[in-house]
Length: 149
Image (cartoon, rainbow, N blue to C red; front, side, top):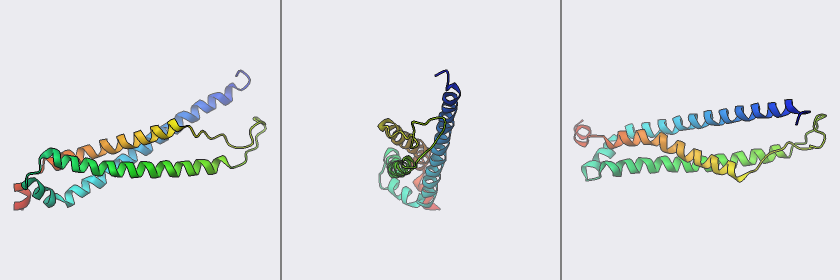
């Protein structure tokens, strides 16, 4: 540990950078989901107003938008995890030669299941939070005002 203190310090810094990049990517994905749902609400205002005029409650309309948000989140998270796994597996096959670490002949990649579970849960949480505001907006639509014009 004392002989390779610099290498371990660099590893901690690299892990922090990787986590910051991952959080930024999730924020960008969240804004993407928010924009998609927000534009969908503006395009479907008349249909939402008709549903509310037919007797759908605010919770029903909000539930429909949140289900759409979860579908986007599930599909995006699963595709992202699959793509990430395939890229990680391809990187783990690359041969690596180092004078510092002579016992390593390939790049060390961790395929810990906890990383995938955390990625899926963060993806779903991001989808929920980015869909909640448009869902509230859709639930507050006044059907009389929209249908009149």
